[in-house]
Amino acid sequence: MPDDALRADVRRADGRRVEGRRSAATSRRVSRSDRLASYWSHHREVSADSFRRLLRHPIASLATWLVIGIALALPGALYVALDNLEKLGRGWEGATRISLFLDLAVDDARGRALSEKLRQRADISAVSFISRTEALAEFRQVSGFGEVLDHLDANPLPAVILVTPRGEALDPEQARTLLDELRALPEVERAVLDLEWLQRLFAMLELGQRMALALALLLGAGVLLIIGNTMRMAIAARRDEILVVKLVGGTNAFVRRPFLYTGLWYGLGGGVIAVALLLAGFVWIGSSAAVLADLYQSDFALGGLSVGQGALLLAGGALLGWAGAWLSVGRYLREIEPQ
Amino acid sequence: MIEFADVSKRYPGGHEALKEVSLEIPRGEMMFLTGRSGAGKSTLLKLVMAMERPSSGTLVVNGHDIGKLSSRGIPFLRREIGVVFQNHQLLFDRTVFDNVALPLVIHGYQPREMARRVRAALDKVGLLGKERSYPIQLSGGEQQRVGIARAVVHKPPILLADEPTGNLDPELAGEIMRLFAQFNQVGVTVLIASHDLSLIARLPYRMLTLRDGRLIQGVGRLAEHDHA
Image (cartoon, rainbow over all chains, first blue to last red):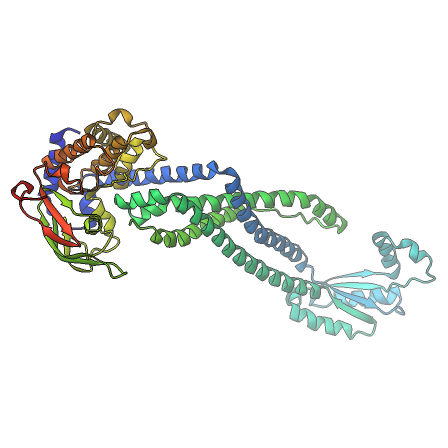
């Protein structure tokens, strides 16, 4: 470096009143916009370098990615499964119906008459009468026990009136009042509100969602610990570099940066694996779910991972990785001070 | 530029490495710091770098009061100081260029300006042709010169060196000292810790001598003293 250039610079340094402020050392040489530009380019370089370092140990990195991926996929799968069950339940919720099983002694004519009477009521929107013969035919077709029925002397099935409540009576409480009223009718042997099992289903779904949340929290904490431990090793491997950087005036943020990116890549990679696992899993069980839905004469289609849920998993993984790195790096970096 | 006022440094074990040291190194001065191992040379340099804090007394470096400096402020103090170590502290997984560029990366230089300054610093220490080499491919003297290039690449007003010639033969050591003298000639304040009395006795610079943590000689040129 030419002497006069150095001299001019030193003179400038001499002429400057020293204030001991943090900007003093840097501002005289690097403009603000230059510093900002190089700040971003440093982020780019550091993130790329951190990623290359992971690829340099592919087996170890893959193992970490898999562990994080599985930890993220488990609650993800549970959540999507519950989501599907809930959708299934909602599809049936509108069809709140009361089944009135009539006394065997009530003949078809009386049954039809009762249906007509019920149809007139303001709180009932639809009534459908299934005679004993029809019930038998339907049972024979659907159940597959047709041959058993042939051995019976008489038709064991009662006639049924399916009552669909209207308006306010759709509300579970009102529906129950209506149910009690209908149950009191002399022709009715048994009255069943179809809603009851739905309420139980939703209660179970809520329980399941809480369990999924608890599982997600536990496994999330596990991911933080995994990242923390991985970070400890990454820091040990770069101990010399950290010392030198601290000696030549690197801030803690500067020292921390590559490790935060390492954590981010671990988390993001884990998220990618989780998404891949879930997609593969849903393809695998999707066909059998379709068969099942067909058997139930349902047009239900298994909902896989939505784009939003996939993005959430990726972002969640990245955030967990970054946070895990943040938590551990701060602690380990304090231990590394130049001696 | 560097001002010690009654500075003492006691380590947690009770060992008192520096005892009431007072000295002033004016801007643009070059001084040697000598004394036996354990006399407190390294502690004195560490205090200037804020690697340690004074137990008592006041130390002001380029306007920074080291005792009161916040830990957030430490990196910005260190950016005003170039340091050369006996063991170079080079990073062996990076090229010579990347080693020297490190302080500029921290300062936030643009790549073009960075390359220009790195080459200028390497040219100054006579290693311009080695920028693509790795430190392991260089001799001890060359490694030390890479360390010096890194210490001066961002043109700090203060240059510290801890036994910079410790592992070098007399001829190489002389070269290194001439390099420091050149930086001093352009206005850099230079403080060199060295026990190589045969070398520094021939050089026309002030000498500070520490013994058991006390400054026993701190003014005047060496030639004016009858120093053994």
